[in-house]
Length: 363
Ligand code: ATP
Image 1 (cartoon, helix red, strand yellow):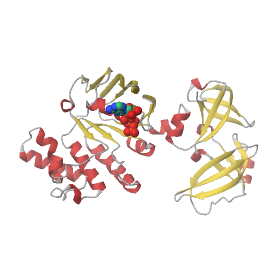
Image 2 (cartoon, protein in one colour; image 1 turned 60 degrees about the vertical axis):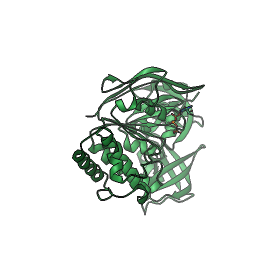
Image 3 (tube, helix red, strand yellow; image 1 turned 45 degrees about the vertical axis):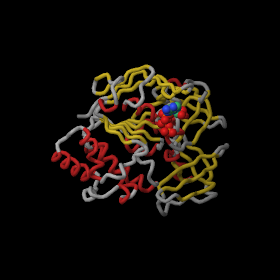
Image 4 (spheres, helix red, strand yellow; image 1 turned 180 degrees about the vertical axis):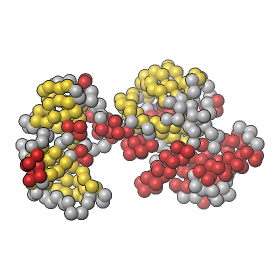
């Protein structure tokens, strides 16, 4: 049974450091949430408080509606996969996976069935008799996941589950991890400092900064509608324009850039106000058009420019454009043949209003 989690107004200090600064959130049973943020922002501490390895100075943790704030870790039915997922080296893979079940005194035949099921789930059915050192890093990671899930926990906590692996293996295992988590009936909280990992695994992403959650929402919303420059920059690359908002209503506003550039832009947060603001435009939101195609349409948010540099990146290519009137933008497009832009080529830069997001100027 997937367990809900309520984390209510929790505070945790370590000496002078406020690791968790009055954080509250609720996670529904069965939901997968990614806690994302830079090193030291308090992600692991939140996970450890939920698991029971740390007690908050104040605040309440409820799992499946029950106040567990003062319960010990083993009283919480939580599956854990921590950053250093070390398997027990002297035990076989099957014994590693069986560990939690044996600890709970499950009957032998039930343990054998469950271990076989779990090794099947992580696609290592024939590895039960091996020792950890006979497995690759990625295989060991999958065993650690099987071990974390073997007791059918209603809540699974994963702290940087893929961080020990190289980039290619990380990507492969990320897809696999998602499938495995979908196959088990559990609520999952994943801690990561990698925004791609957070967006691919989490149904919701909580972005943290200095012990607080600064934005929470579905991945596309947090990426596409950041409420602050910190969130926008943490979630990916962006072009930035400083300017003023002149009039706004219905989620749209008239923006005038420092160089006089006028744009219709999106405002997702009323707090952005009318004064000086920053405009965030993701590289893939930018359209680049040949002069003649753009000349006939007379649409808004189009600025003439000139290609400065084209950099192939495999599946994508990035194009740096100098804007008429000053400033540059970086665009990213699929790297299809036959559509190449070259340095020196004049282009029209299209900035769709829904891709131009106003955020307050950072304090
Ligand atoms: P990382 O991504 O580097 O693991 P994090 O976001 O998980 O970082 P935490 O491990 O939660 O961050 O740490 C939050 C803050 O609390 C940091 O400043 C850290 O140094 C401090 N901290 C965490 N645990 C302890 C502890 N046991 N004693 C003292 N300070 C601690």
